[in-house]
Length: 344
Image (cartoon, rainbow, N blue to C red):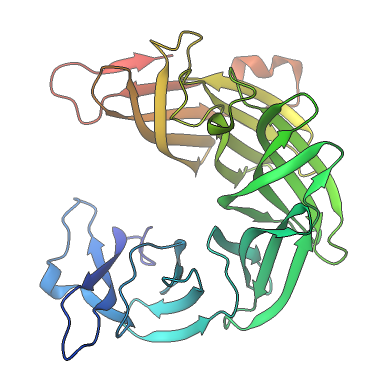
């Protein structure tokens, strides 16, 4: 993410020492480096090293985010016990909470004012799979645990999307999840709006996997969920997971905060499995007049490329003339040496 002074970026990475000393296991640090606006990275020996674990090797993060002069991150121990920590850019470890539960699927801001966070996962209660949210205050102290319904009608929630929670000013939050519709064997992704006080589901929006409905390995997968400049929401998802035979499309949607669809488009897809795009490691980033999707892309038998796909909204999508303002395009590969492809 960008540094607080807007001069370049902050790059934080887990590193660990696998060597043992007198029978003790390795050690894990968070290495914090700066990258200037010319993409010059600070030398490793000058980077800030913050000890996260003295005798434990951590191999992955649940999530990490930059908030002003501090980094907030969550990571799992070997037994799936999550740890939440707050680290200053000066190398100080300010807060650290070792949880007494297992939840390693997602970590996100749950409330803006006052600042609150949520670790979330899915758990089985009886015969039902439910979404469970563990809420923490700004000092990373546990506050409450929320268990929401695991299904409504024949729609069963399968897995929450990683870091796809958005808090709203009306006392609710929106979560992206995968689902399956059992009576007709279909699956996809959905957005769910919950009341923070009553835990009641207030609204939902469903997006089916396409073109495969029934293959369990081909669920649609959320890419990202962002606020738009006019107070609405942007949502992007892969219509199939990348491992499926038919590669599917990327779906892009604009919704209001009650999850009513304002417009919906598809990009980077094909009805032919042999020529379809395989896109992975995708992210959605808000821009001044819309949003951008970036990630890895390739076709069967071809090399991997990086793509960027821009959607310019111009806040005009509530009028019939809105079609004139939707200008989606992408270019690839990046970097390139001799040829740059532009798809409009």
